[in-house]
Image (cartoon, rainbow, N blue to C red; front, side):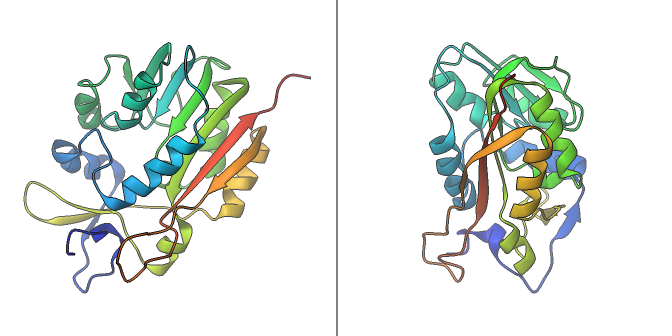
Length: 228
């Protein structure tokens, strides 16, 4: 069981915490374009359940990483899929999935206002302290009546001391720096950005584990208010 929910266990020996740039520079070489651990599998099932139909739509994957949600958007018939990520190392991985990529911070998206039908953002808003700004920026580039589906490491787990960890090529274990956002923070950020929360999913750990039954992630589906 050592590999199961390694990222969600307290350890006596604490991993080295890295900022986002350094963490993904080290993680990118082994970061596959699929859900490659139990936390991501739970989060991904919830994300895909909450996604609307994508056929013929223009879709943006914010903090696309290695491109796992770009893969699903392409498979679901999106007319155009664009991925944005702050890490050049992760974008190199995503190029195996799609050529339509750009390097940018999720707090300053290089896209015109009201230009996407659907926005996805998987396990990335916890990387930034300013959640309202991140949600407002995604809302800005979303068309009226468009849908945003995004996820975060569950605040309960974070408050209990769980950390997102990985083992790099040097054999050492590292943790990604994370900012805790409560459900009320998500709801307030969406409301301030002109988004109506339509659904919330909190997938629970469903394998044999000390924290079985606890929520591992929080997934939000919100729709941008239509004009008028």
